[in-house]
Image (cartoon, rainbow, N blue to C red):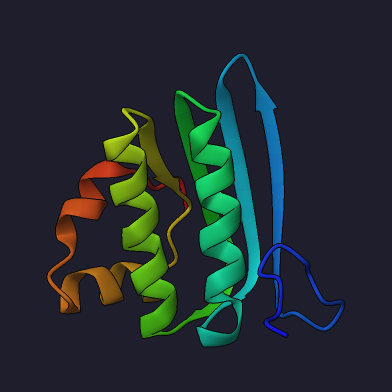
Length: 116
């Protein structure tokens, strides 16, 4: 039986806190956005984007992100754009900013409001 990506095991090293009002959603991420948490992140962000006109992702609490995490971040951006949902990143850590530059994903930096 396949695991349900919407179920958050207690030991999952990623926490997502979602608040929504008037079609605007804020997603606060903390922990690790890595291979083991990518499916959960992707399903949750898709669910939030589908019911929002605007989403702000606060990444300031992320302690680590690998290539799978970067991939689902790009997927969230693409999903938002296809849904005509405004997409913003907030509180990018220097590590995440470096990853965006190294992978030539600087177009995501244009969607940021870095308030570090």
